[in-house]
Length: 165
Image (tube, rainbow, N blue to C red; front, side):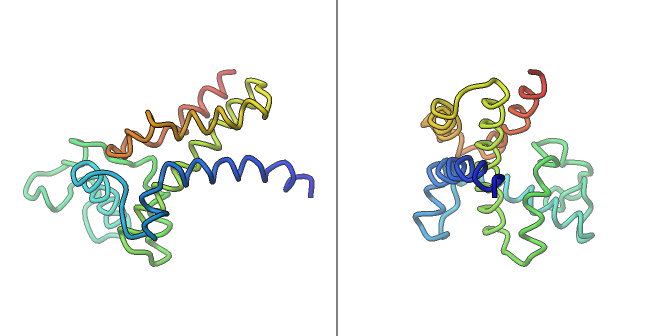
């Protein structure tokens, strides 16, 4: 019971950050994908290729859209670090668009939780830490990055900073 009491507020803050950052997903009823027609679609394509490669339908390091060139996955951001977050919904049965939306929302939530953890390590009081988290990971400056989803996953950096302190 004590664990639930200590986690509910960070989870609520994380949820608020995710809803704010992913407004296009939540307020369209899941009909829209955040971002533009360029980078967002390329990121979705690469994540889906990684999934298809891991289940054996394609060669992992050589996306079929670049045939006959080999090892072209290394010409772009390959998402190897965040692909597991995308693969789980695909294995459950979600479509590639819905899996991308889930991936995006979970990355947003992980960013908020990691930032909260960093602030806790730095001994910032919750009274200051919760609003600071909202401003830090879902501000208008961060919303600008939605058009470039490859830049959204910053939670490893926050965990690294927490480890350093």
